[in-house]
Image (cartoon, rainbow, N blue to C red):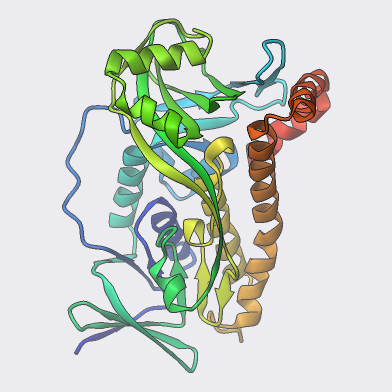
Length: 388
């Protein structure tokens, strides 16, 4: 039975796990990236329905890892303006990157494109990529031993769980999860627009849910419609033409006629928070640590910020401290708590506020949009926060 030794084993080969492995490799650590076996990805010409709004700060970080330059610029769209609408026609909020002295608020990129860029950098790095399923975990004297399906073993003082909302590593560690079911589905699809989107992201809070349009290159948009199951069922059962008409009308025909270019898909919306981010020799990042409502588009950005903080913590450790040291790992956990709590309460609070049919809350939320739109300094601060 073969045994391979590493400093860190990252479990989960998605966006956050891949970026985590690259960042740890940059610290001159011996890193393995363990991900489930899958068929080689086939090149696709169409648009990916899974779209991410990467904050300016995380874009800079990905650039520092050599990832962003691997992307095809023709598949990336920078967001320069954001417009948020309430359920009153005159309740609106406009954010401009230029007003906050920034080039852009975020950049829209497809999951497939970003994953391919990360994979290319991994190929050129010192990270050992292992396509296998873990079947067992033993933790003893500051060393973690992972058993793989073929019987081989991986040993490391630190395991990093980036294996998603249903994390195997989190379960093995006995870390519980607090969960809230929003009783909603997120319906996603991409469209071609009749009118230019002008690099503007648009979002509507209404009785039919929360509708977001994210700009894509070549006069396309990505839609995310967070709504109750009945509305989601209506959308998913619509023909292509009916869906395009419904989405265009829900967005006040802001971009004229829409034409569907990718089939609609739907996924359930939950909020999940791990009761702990760390144990001796173990740290959770990304969806393994937290899942929030997509209305603020901060899910993957939170995960990347987890990785940045974890790597900073490890880089600044005292020479005598093991990577498995709980005191060390708790520095990471403490550093991430404020950001996690803020994002969780902001997204949950906005959802609750705009989901309510109470007249007083309806008035409050629309007045809040109007008032915020009048204060340029506050808007600048909000833009800077969203750009981190």
